[in-house]
Image (cartoon, rainbow, N blue to C red; front, side, top):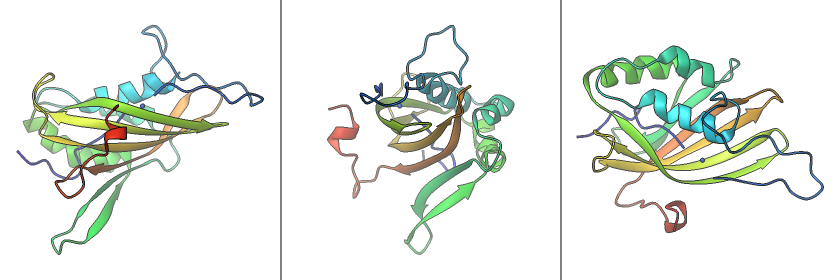
Length: 179
């Protein structure tokens, strides 16, 4: 089964502040905190909102994860001529494009490894994902989601999610698989 380029999505690793730097924004989460209060919780929420059995997704919840001024989702892929390009979407455009697919097809995206770097109020998360048709099923696709996030001193916001799917010519390096 091959998914449209707009459907693959998202993922994160614990990190610490550098000695002498400002206090680090929250990275780890607990079940009791809001989904935007830590890097762990906002990335987990992003995967949750696109994953599920065939049927509608909670796009209102999804949109609440993204910064209201210019957030983007970007999918890398090849055009019909074989050239690599990027498809840039707003969260609403992503919901329209992927929503039709999700309405008819089960889709679960699972984070399998994560690398995080942050400085001040910004964070970059490289999240390796597997896409499945069942929560614990065999993956039909893998790739890396690159999250850029903002800590505004009250919460984390997703600014961009930029992803590229694994291909036979472009396997995921071992260091992005948790190895």
